[in-house]
Image (cartoon, rainbow, N blue to C red; front, side, top):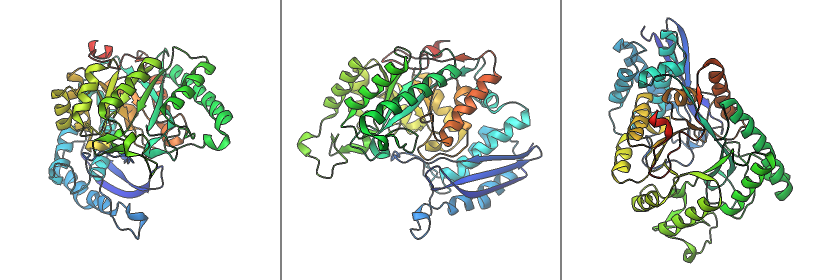
Length: 442
C-alpha cells in the first residue's frame, strides 16, 4: 500500500515553540506524527530547520520545514510508489532528497515527521502494533522487553534557574518486577520527594521544569543526591531504586576546563576544574550513592577525558552530545573506547531507520542504549514503541508529571498490558564499566 497524500502543519511543543506535525494518508486511513525539539543540543546534531525570522515566533517558526514536507518530501514520496512497509527505502529516499550530511537543506524536523508517520502507516498496513512492526524492521525477536524508566526528578543546568550545574538527576526503579510496578515506585517516590523539597526549601521550590522535575535552590550535586536518597528511603524503596545523572557538561565547558558555577556571571576561573578532577568527583559520588549511569560527563569534543573516565569507572557512561545518535560519531567513540552507553534521540539523526542502525551499532560493541525524549516534546509516543521494539531496556522521558511526558509512560503501560509474555528489564539493560548489559547476552 502506497502513500496517497502527505500534509504537514505547524503545531506547538510543550514549551510553546512551533514544531512540525505530519499527516500521511494511505487507503487504511490517516497517520499522524509530531516532532520533538531539544534545548541543550549537541553541535553535531542533525539540523532542526527554523525560519529565523525574529518578528515571528521569536525566530522559531517552522514554516520552511512544513513547506519542505508539503512541496518536496510528500510529493516525491507519493511519486516513488514505495510501500509504507518499506521503511528503509523510504528513509533512504528522504535522505537523498535532502542531499546534505546533516539534513540541513530540508530539515531533520521535516524528514523525521515523514519517517515517523510512515512507521505508523506501515504497522497499520501489516495489521500489527507499532512496536511489533519496528521490532520486525530491526530484526528483533520476542519476547519483548519492557524498559526500566529513568525519571528526571531534579533539574539543573540549562533546564533550571538554580545554581546546579548538572542538568538531570534521575530515579531508576531497577528493583521493580514489571513496568507497572516501576511506575508505582517512581510516582510514589516522586510525590515523597515533592514533600521533602517543599519542607526544606518552601512551596515555590516544587514548581516543575520543562521535563516535570523539581528545581530547588540547591547549592550543588551533593545536596541533590542527599534529597534523592532521603526521598527513596522515606518512600520505602531503598535498594529498589538506583540513580542516574545527566551532567550535560558541554554547557559548562570553558577554555578546556569545567565551570561548576557557570550560571554565575562572575564565576572565578581559578575554581574551574580539569576533566581528570571532574572524573574524580564523579567517582566519589559513585562510591557514596547508588549511581548506575552518568550521561555526558564531559564536553562533546573532550575525547581524552571520556576515554580516561570510561576506563576507570564501573558504571554506564552514556554519550548524548558526544554521539548525537550518529553512526559516524558512535564509530569514533567505539574506536576511542570513550563510553559504553548511547542516548538514542530520534531527532538527533532524523529518521527511524538511522535510529535503529545507531542503536544496533552501539549494541555491537556491548553498549547500553537508553531511548530518550527531548525537553521540548509533543503528545507523540513513538519512542515508547521504539524502546520495546529494540529491547534495549532503558527509557528516559521525564518525571511522571506533565502530559507530554506521561503520554510515553502511559503508552508503555498499555503495551505491557497487551504483551503477556514480556519481561521487565530492571538493571539488565545497563552496561557497567567493561561489562555489557545482561540483555545483550540473551
